Image (cartoon, rainbow, N blue to C red; front, side, top):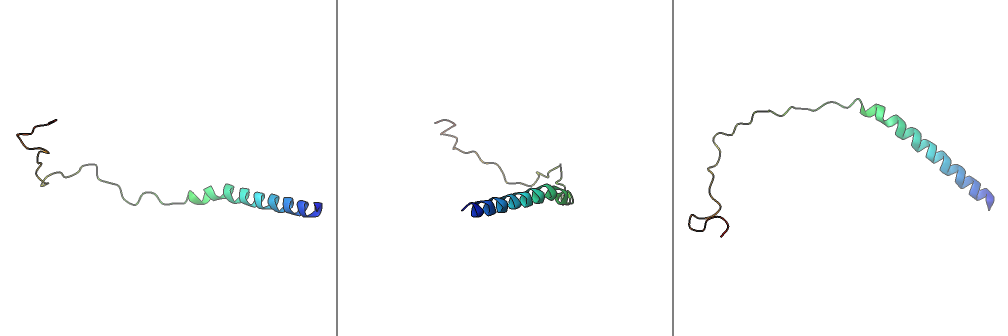
Length: 64
């Protein structure tokens, strides 16, 4: 019974070490990721849009 426990504990330790090494080495790979593909324009064309309409009729008015 103790042999099985020792084998399982050793297996868990090996898996834990492997995961630790894998996660500590991973950030160096992500630093090679490319930057943003396109920069959004800071000036937006707002001409030629749809006409604004009131949400209520003139008789109702707001809050009625």
